[in-house]
Image 1 (cartoon, rainbow, N blue to C red):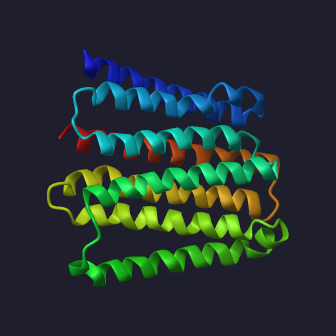
Image 2: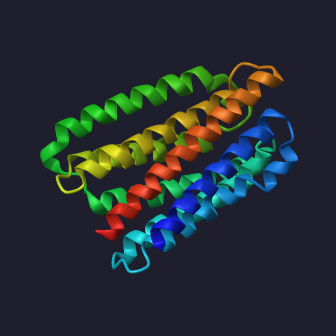
Length: 236
């Protein structure tokens, strides 16, 4: 029974995500208040259904809080053209990434034995974030977004590093490479595309819609991968 409900919920999530993209493509943003904020509640119900009998309460709490703040971020970023709501949305997702990071570090802490690989991975992440910020720096400064964006890039980098680190755990190796690592990478790609759309060169309405659809699809897949991976861990 639970498996059938889970399949139904995943299907419902996909339908809502497709509808949201259709609304973006057709320029009917006002309808997105009925689609975008529904995505994370569906995944929370999936988490609840799949982990009813699970004993890992703290891990479940971390993921539940990540879902909650993602939901609040989704709602705030419906009006991301407004500076206040954009910063609020960043703050919500900043907090969501804290909870994701704590979850990853709980199941696989960073180890001094792997300091070399941790440093190398960190350098790659720093280089990527530096290139992205360098590309958008002028617009970020002009809009007085410098501190919020820098703080967000920092926690996003920590989330990605902690997710990549789960791949070194023998017991969770498979789940890490099937869920956590691709999910975290997709999250970074989605946020990067959002930043380019908002702070990059001026683009026409059609290109803006394509950017937004790309942001939403990568974001949707990222959340599904991360949360389903967490479900697999919590059920063990």
